[in-house]
Structures are given as C-alpha cells and as structure tokens.
Amino acid sequence: MPFVSMTVNGVRQEAEVEARTLLVQYLREHLRLTGTHVGCDTSQCGACTVHVDGVGIKSCTALAVEYDGATVTTIEGLQHGNELHPMQRAFHEEHGLQCGFCTPGMIMSAIDMVRRNGYDLDEPTIRKQLDGNICRCTGYHNIVRAIQAGANAMRPR
Amino acid sequence: MHDFVYHRPQDLTSAANLISGNPEAKLLAGGMSLLPSLKLRLAQYSDLVDLKSVATLQGINRDGDALVIGATTRHAQVAASDDVKQAIPALTVLAGGIGDPLVRNRGTIGGSIANADPAADYPSAVLGLGATVITNRREISGDSFFTGLFETALKGGEIITAVRFPVPLLSGYMKLPHPASRFALTGVFVAQTRSGVRVAVTGAGSSVFRAAAAEKALTADFSPAALDDITVDPDGLTSDIHASAEYRAHAIIVLAKRAVASARPQ
Image 1 (cartoon, chains in turn brown, cyan):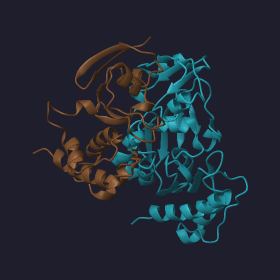
Image 2 (image 1 turned 180 degrees about the horizontal axis):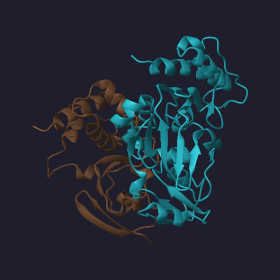
Image 3 (image 1 turned 90 degrees about the vertical axis):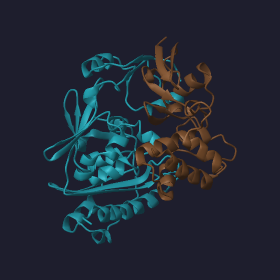
Image 4 (image 1 turned 135 degrees about the vertical axis):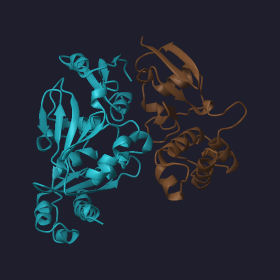
C-alpha cells in the first residue's frame, strides 16, 4: 500500500493507506479528526473543506495519496491553545450556525475566502464566494455576518 | 471506489511512459470530474497517473498574439491572472464561474477539455477563440478537438500540455449556470477574432458547437441588436429535466446578446 506522510495541524503523520482512500477518510477514520464532516460526499456541500498548503479544498473529492508531503489544516488546527481563531470566534459571537453540521466547512471556506479576497468583504461578495458551502438549516444571514466580522478580525494589527 | 495503483511522475516523459500502452491507466489532473466518477463506480482504472508534479504543465504565458495556458493550471489561477484579464477578459469571467471557489482551487483547464463534458465551460472558449490544443505529440486545432459526448481527438497515451488561445479583438462569455453544480445549462462564448466572428455554444448539445447564423449576423454588425431576428432550431439540442430544447434554443440567442454586450469596450 502507498505510504503517505503529511503534516496535519502541525503534527507529522505517516501511514500506509489504500490508494483509493479519500483525504477526508484519512483525516476522520485514520487520524480520528472528526471535525471535518462529510455531508453530500459529491463535492457540492463543502462540509468537508480543509486547507492543503494554505488553500481550501473539498476533502471528499481528493485522494490522501495526492497530498503526500503536503501541509493540511483542519478545523481542529485553527485555534491557538485555548484561543479560538478569529473566524471561529466570529461564528460564535454572531451565532453563525443552527445545527452546526456545516460549520467546520463554513469556517474553513471563510478563511480561504479571506485569503482570496482580503479582509474587507461586503455582503454580495461573501454570498457569491460562499457558493461551495451549503447550510441546510438555511441560516445564511448569520453566517454572512460572521464571515464579515471574522474577516475584519483577521486583519493583522 | 475500486482500488488502483497511484503514480505521481515528476516529468512529462515519465507520465507518458506510464500511460502509453496501458488502456486501463488514466491521467489525473484536478480530479474534479474523475474522482466523483470513480466514487460512483462509473469508471474504473488499474492505474492513476497524477500530473500534479509535472512542473512544465503549469503556468500562464503571453506569447505574442497568443495566451498559452498550461494544462494543469487551475481555474482559480486563470480567474486571478492579470495576463488573462488583460488579454482575454472573457476567459477571466469563464474561469471564475466554474463550479465554486473550492472546485476552482483544484480543477484544471487540461482536465476540463480532455473530459469534454457537454456542459463544461472551457470547451466553448477553445472553440470560440479558435484555440490550439498542444499535446506531447502534436498540435490539435480547437475546431477538430471535440468530437462528441465526452469524446475528443486525443489518442491513447496522448497528454495535453497546454492550450494556446489567440488573443481576440473582443470576447464575451455568458451562461445560465445550473443552480447546484454551476455547469452551463447553456453557455455562449462570442469572440471577434482577427479571422472573423466566432460563437461557440456549450451545454446545449452532446458537444460544444458553433452557431453559424449568429456568427453571420455578428460579422455584419457586432452588436446585440444584430441578433434580434436570429433564431436557433431546437431540433437536436439537449432536452432534459432542467430545460427543454426549445428553452435552450432561445437561451442561446439571449446569452449571445449578453455576451456581445459584455464584450464591447466600456
């Protein structure tokens, strides 16, 4: 079986996996990082969004072997000690969730949105750029508010 | 998904050696169509040859009157490129409207055109700009590249290395995106090139095609009004749960007008 080595949330992880192992399976079932969710499993909903080498991708439609040598960040890797990432804190403060299932993907996608579009995000931009993440509670109003606040809070001071 | 042997060659020759003579091997670029089809067991391969580490397939270069985009250049890179925006703004619009941002972070131009999905966006640019598809063996005219539903002129073992787009005088792209997938229910690429007007339609047939009547009208007058009296015969167009052939025929002209309007200098 292929040997895979990647840095996940700052920790080097090595394993033998089947070539067909999806990245999300590797994260959830091998590393037990179950914060990354599988929603649709067809790259529509974005619940499985993680960062690979700093770029947001849908881990349900990626092979673990493709990322041998890569640096992966999941929702579990965002906070520093007890300090939430500014985007996590914004989702908490703006109540950017209802059931919470889509939230890890929303937050990972929101941080990638800031990488692509900067710290000043207006509502139309956020809604358009959130195209790849679906909330089945349809709680988008607070999610949009949370992303706007979170993006602003991520600005280096 | 059935298991397979995974390869990640570092150069084009190694990649070609891995797939040549092995019809059960498949090239993997961004994987945005291939991986879902493997997951659904619609397809099965003995070997996947990942082109991710072949550095020569990456990048965007302005080459005189042409824009050359490497096969594994991702949609997000094309959408964000100043060179692309300056040379062919319609390509910026097209690349920025594929799927969603996370799909654009992974999907590639070479993968899109090799897959030749009937509703994919890029084929309309290849045909609409009269582009040339460059492979490890030859150059293929965009006019003869797409041969049918998920069919192209590529031979077994052939690898797309880049696409060369002649820079047009004007160009525009408009589509009706499918609300979930953002694939084109119908998409129209119009271009005023140095060798004439081209109108390429995706999402409306088994493969991308040119709209001759619209091209003729726009050759006489490159304006939306020139298409007022043009109609498209729905016979032979795609009809499915999302839209009838008649709806698509009507949409082609509406979208062509909008594409022309977007192409004109502001």
